[in-house]
Length: 157
Image (cartoon, rainbow, N blue to C red; front, side, top):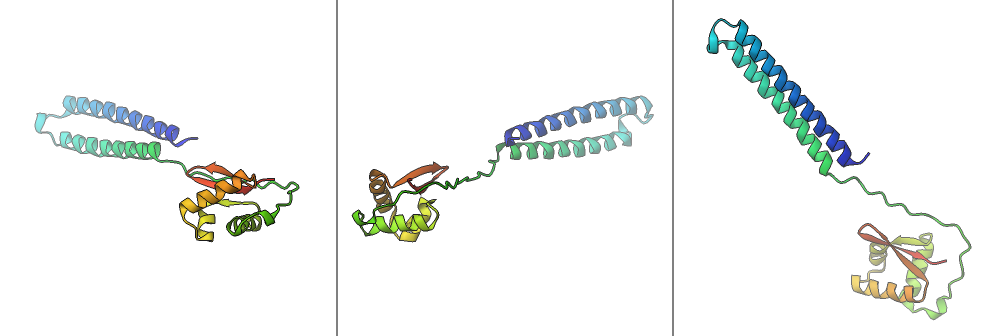
């Protein structure tokens, strides 16, 4: 179930509890009004007020929990599928040094890894990495797949 739905359910429960608290307190005030002989100075009214504030504080906590759950993001799961097919031989002779290094790293990593990790491994800047991967994509050796805010670089079969 998504966080928004769980949050809405908790908010609904909080609203239901608030209604029950208010109905209960109205009933208590009516009973105290009919049975207390001291009038408005009766100590039972103070007790009802304290119970009302405690109950409403609990309802506010329930609402806060509902809103936090409703507006929190669920954890994203990154799924990387491993494909076991025949892999074509890549001719490394036509590639320059950096291109060969990228292909070799991807081969060691079972054909794929995050672009940011590849950039760190090679020690290349962001722009240089993008240009290098653009060249390899143009040669149809790799493919970049979007995963959230990251790219996964995989060898093409």
